[in-house]
Length: 328
Image 1 (cartoon, rainbow, N blue to C red):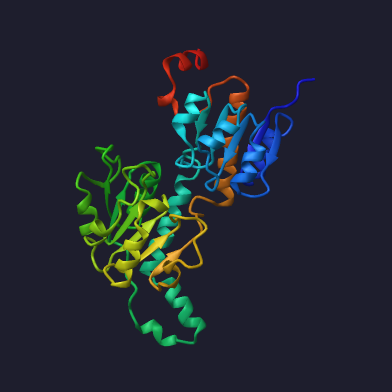
Image 2: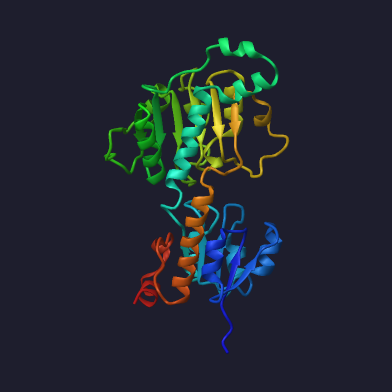
């Protein structure tokens, strides 16, 4: 009897995805996220399901000699060498559309936390500082300006919710010319930083976007403005951000992602009172994790069954000959 194909899973996924694979594949769940562990387990895997922590570089992909598909839960694929995977004939897929609203809701939660000073007020009550209620640092968000950088599905979902809350929304995305809803579009990114009360990042990590939010753009922000990042940690020059926050050149920052994860215990961000932090969970809820796991498992099963999986991210790197063989 032919043995079942193996699926390497870098970190636990929702049980619905596991149930889809059971009986159709051998599931190999990594006990930790160390690279050494992944290298040992990937050698005979036919597919891999990755979360954000594990990186599939040339070394890892070369070790997986049987790999046919690498599926990234969520949208970001910066932890996979797309071109090298294509050279090896391996699909790299992601699961867009499974947590767009989830991330958008997290962004709105951060906006409201700052606007209503939720964390400050919580600490005040716990410290018996009832007089904080007279500080009046809270603001309404109606008619406040939100600037969105990167207007894909998540940027669109964020704009939609914020427009419903009465915010004025302007988006910058060099690949978008119209928004489809009552949102302004600008071709000048500096406008976003100069005019917005809240700036929310929704960009992929690429050579062009890494650390592009630094001294130049931070210095353009209004003194009472807030920066929000639920996208990728390396979009921001963290040293420049810490400096700007220490000098009160902007009111605060809300960060769900960081250059290095987990965030180091020595990070200066931890000691700043005008920063809200969360551990890369903007896209993770009970509901979204189920949708993501189902989509990831389906991509693996489609590949095993000889079908073209949805959302192949590295198709541009396949040669014409490869495409003819794979997609005939």
